Length: 266
Image (cartoon, rainbow, N blue to C red; front, top):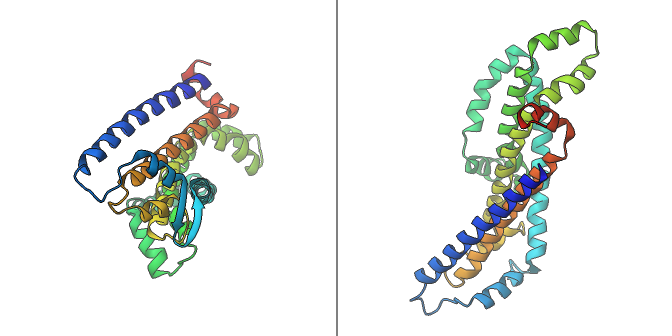
């Protein structure tokens, strides 16, 4: 199973490399007649790694990357914990779950920019809005999949376990959540991508949050298009690595693998 994950990483990097080459040549073509534009790849790479001035700060790509990953990790962790808790609570109660569908359907289709306007400008969470937006934008697939997974748990088995007079906490932790976990994990996978995307977007719109989004904002003009290109490709590469780590972690969850064993033939 680990070999499959490594193979997927290899193919992803191969596709990434081909896209990078096409992107590079297309950029050269677009800016070929721009005399004031720096198209020196070596200079652009040096500028990418060592930024002389980003909103008054001397920094480098490693610091910016760690800053972005920090915001992403906090947002994704909070969204996962809250999403699983809320989704489980809704899935255990048929009537509450039914009513909640209408609220979930309202919020989940909202574009992320709505949450940015809401928390940053209307609620004026200027310094901390990145956390509110990140959690609120990425929590819905986790809630939906958790709720769906809990609702799908075999009712006959659930009733049989109730007859044994097991405490609610034990039934929940030893049966309901393990059975629903594949659904929960799928929701977390979707939330992972949304959380990473919204973190970059928030940094771009609020460059004081020094991160990769702020760096992209700093180089959005046409003076250094290759630097912008490298930043975009770097963000894409980080997305590939995050997905690889998530899938690698999945292969080491023995209780999750048990749920898939019927289909995988383990």
